[in-house]
Length: 123
Image (cartoon, rainbow, N blue to C red):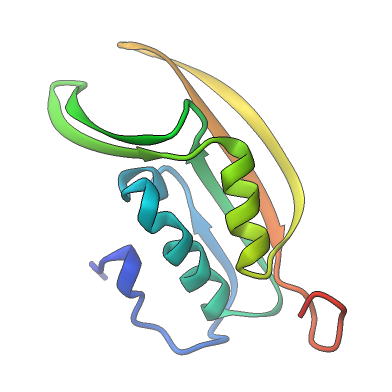
């Protein structure tokens, strides 16, 4: 399926897990909170969200990367954590990973977060 991350066409509570690796980074920084909220919406209580975010600062960047015109949106890790918390996620693990790419090092924020079970304090 091809779709916009801001318009996920699934029913609420449809999935046990959502995985978004290196995709949210191609969404404008200011729109990432709605992408996270959309992931939370489609998860069942007790579901899991595994995602990578940029960790290299804040803002949007457009330019050539690996020979292709590309767009990246980035929030700092504290902002990522805040967006996850605001969407109702409980962060289980988060870490910064540095990838050594051809055009230089890139920092990514890896996060595993849970959607609280129904009836828990965070649901």
